[in-house]
Length: 164
Image (cartoon, rainbow, N blue to C red; front, side, top):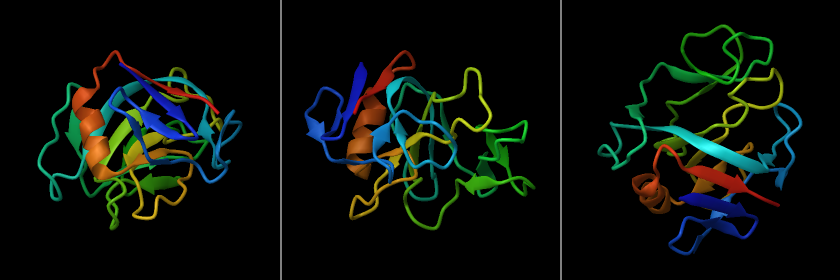
C-alpha cells in the first residue's frame, strides 16, 4: 500500500483523511527545524504506542511501547542524530513520553535515516493530531482513529508518498 499525502489530506485507500502538516507546509526539506513536511517517497519503519493509554494496536509493523525515558535525538552534531535514545541524554532531543496525546501512537517514517545526514532533519513521524489540527514541526498528524486504522493496514514494505 502506498500512503498518499498532499495538502488536501492523507489517502491510504479508504478515502481522504484530514491531516496536519509542518508549520512551514509541505516542501523540500533543507535543514533541521525548518518546519517542513518533506516531499518524497519514504518507507515506513516501525511504530510506537503508549501502553498506559491504549491497548496494543493491530499492526504488521514492528511495534514497541514507549517508555518514560524514551526520546529522539535532534542534535545534528551528535552521533545519535535522528535516532531513538534513552534519557537522560545530554544533547538536544525530543521527549517521546509526552503529557499531551500527540505521541500516543507514532509511525516512524524513514526520512534521513539511510544514511543519516547531519542537519537535514529528524523525527519525521505520523502521529496523533492536535484537537484543532494545528501544525506540526514537520510531521504528518491524523486523528487517532484514522492513525490506528492506517497502522492496522500498513505492511513493512509500504511507503508514504508526500507531494506538494
